[in-house]
Amino acid sequence: MADLGFRYDSSIYPIHHDIYGDPGAPVKPHTVALPSGRGLLEFPASTVYVMGRRIAVAGGGWLRHFPYWFTRWGIRRLNRRRLPAMVYFHPWELNPNIPRVKLDLKNRFRQYGNLSVMEGKIDRLLDEFDFGPIREYIEGPEGGKMKAHL
Image (cartoon, rainbow, N blue to C red; front, side):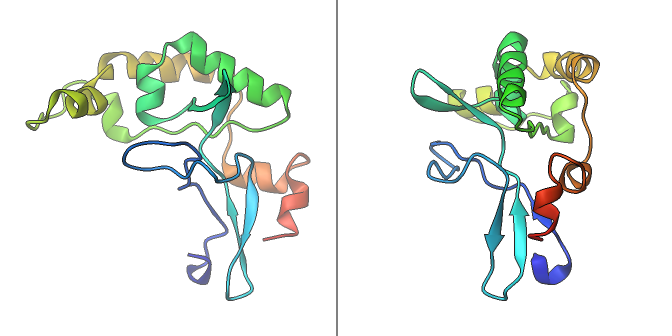
């Protein structure tokens, strides 16, 4: 990715999950040194510790399935530690009427559960928090130190 001109990435989810995740990955933005000598800033998906366990807090199905108060609490907790929250969602998650495919119960819940509440959650997040592109964080006063590592 760095060879193609990308400066940052957000594909690591530092959690334990049955189909993805890297529970040993750092939870803070960090620079990954690459064999080419270049660096790539990894901006991991946001997690918080709850009763000694790392829990996803602000993206995709986690955002859809957890109650809004939990997401708000998690983002505030991160921000108090002067950490940015990486909030993401897939465009299809804003359409409660997406075509359905046949899935078992667990995967049907993962894929389609709470689609009807997603737009409202995004609206509330935008009302309650300030968001910006990763580039602003990297180049701004909080993340300026990272700029030198890219």
